[in-house]
Image (cartoon, rainbow, N blue to C red):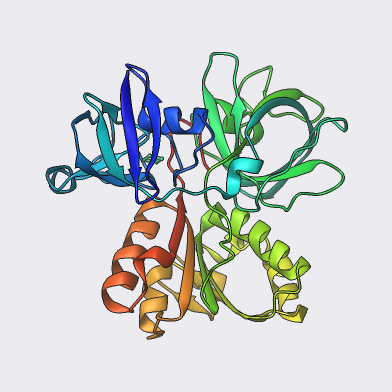
Length: 347
Ligand code: FES
């Protein structure tokens, strides 16, 4: 067993052998930034002040060799090999929403595009489930595997959560919705009982956000952003909010009507849909290209902005690099949730 000390909070906790720093921290109620928990998204990146670690299995795009050589580590994969001191922000906000495991019933499955479905899960009426809009849940499968999906609505009295799920061909969970030929006993079927664990993740609105807010989503990354914006509207948030949503085809703008309605809210709201792969027959007259490039093209100075980005790791990383290097974005005001695809995980 080794000791881990976090800076600047000076909080200390123990890590058992073979345990990752992230799971040891969460076990004692200490919440540090994280997303995928499997070394793919980079959200849990921190830096070593002193001590050594086994870096564990991770993807290079989450932690490069260069970053490793310059004291970087991923809290979700690193295991201490000595007592260790780390610089990592300590977040306490989600302490009150401890993750728990519970059953849920598939209430409704609505296929909204050829490869996206909106699933509503009903949680037990006698169990309260509180979470911060933007967080995700894991669906627990029989073989011990889990699939992560963000919640796309805010907490509600009906105890219903909404997930936006994209088809991942070959994936056990999503093939059962989109592929008629697949499994005879689909897991995601109306009235089926599933088990889930949540709330998880640290993608949620920060009370100390800057004056203006920029949301950037790609694909179903709009889900958790929808939950955050609906919550802001319910709290009569009246500051400037800009949303860029990048999709492949205009048909993928599957919650367009809901978003258009946000213009009638107290928000000073601007919405820019961006399509990357429009065909002639689409007759798309709006913005084209990659969503983060559209923001760069618009020459917005992000000095007084907090940015919330959600979607593919490619988009999230490109946005972080471009905005912090060339648009004056304060690094501490970039919050993200990168959807990593592990089998048919899609959060
Ligand atoms: S890389 Fe650690 S949480 Fe995603």
